[in-house]
Length: 634
Image (cartoon, rainbow, N blue to C red; front, top):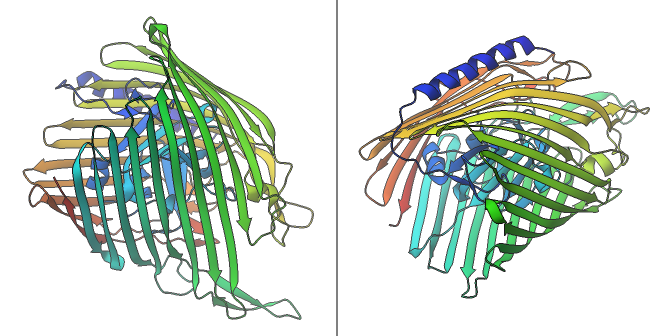
């Protein structure tokens, strides 16, 4: 196994460093412990959960001033990001070194993602509409079903609070001819809460691929709206609903290959112009919840998500068009029962159906999945215990059972250790199963789901303004799906590979007085067991450091992101160099309602590459300067 000895040394040193930091941390005033719901589907404080969790609140989102959603994930503990250019270009998110389609994305509880590719469109998520992000690392298939081998990322949209209607608005712009604006209103009463907001982002972008397509910048625009409402009745019943909708266009570079019709020899290469994709994605959910007894709560929710993409490549010979639309209809009935002794029993049934409409004639264009799940959580003496079990029945591959066990023990008033073991699976995509045969690719309806087993050991220290969390993990994935060449020279997916991924995550934070600091380090050993090579685009080390300070009405801060080298190809011959970037930011509160903010991203104008295609690097933006004016009615 490559890098195993160096990784072990770094693991030992990092755990020792964490222990020293915890032992020397100064205790201070009591800290409000954030609540997380994604880990078990039930509210828990982050110190109570037996999972590795990162929470990003609205205050932090506004402070970081991100231009795109993946800016908020980049460099977090256990999370890797590789995007094929900035501003709306396809992005991959690797949680604990697993594939991008091994991370489940939820928006207010709604499953998101394309059934054809299997991956969410991370690049189209609007930061301005997000209230909170929960990142849960480690398998969660036994709770949510397929896709959650590496973990779950859940987004909660903006929501209202009790009080009169309050308006918020912003306008901004900056480098690459970037413009953005948005407005919203939120409020509520003791029984009703509501929020409605809309935003628009537009940029000329940069030329993503040098020497491919035309030399013009590849622009991007995004128009989004979100809304959320809930109302409680006197009889204890509550109804709720949420919506997130985004649409826009992203441009890209592509070449048209001209062949001689008689000899089939390549005679010319010309840029496709125009070349763009029009996209739409949405998540809608409505439901009702009620306490049936003093100890039994029930909730029924219906939801739908859409992922739609139309692509046009304008050529000199003929335009090339394609359309891939996915609709997912879902229902979830969840019950929560409080048992004697402080135990909690959670169980339910969820079902969803995927439908595909496309210019390609898929052999199958729909399939359903029904899952029954249960979670038990409680204490035996000083020991914290949690267990989950799920059975899925899928129209394509039949039944699959997954489970997870977790254990925790407080070893002092400030430190708790934890351990867990869990299984997970990932269902093949419609492209992998049913894509019609072409000259280059053909689906394989005989594919089996990818399966995994994960072992995790962790510890968390929290005292006053300081917290430190460390976790080591080992994941083995069997029946990995990879493309192989068939007898006719076409690529076709097969269950052939096995991967072993192990690593260390360190995360820490300090918040007291005028100072806020957050840091994360990930050490990763992701290996293809068949070849002994590293998995592509998985750097063995990455780190992130955010430091902010308030000085009166002025706040200043910076973010340092560093990433070790990685490989673009599975043969490990195309090396992507390591890099580090630094962002600087500041904001000034003009008064209680008006704030002006400015940021300099990639301040030192570093050149770096996180993805490559056919030997051509996907360009990343150089130094970018942005200014925003915010209004928040008080």
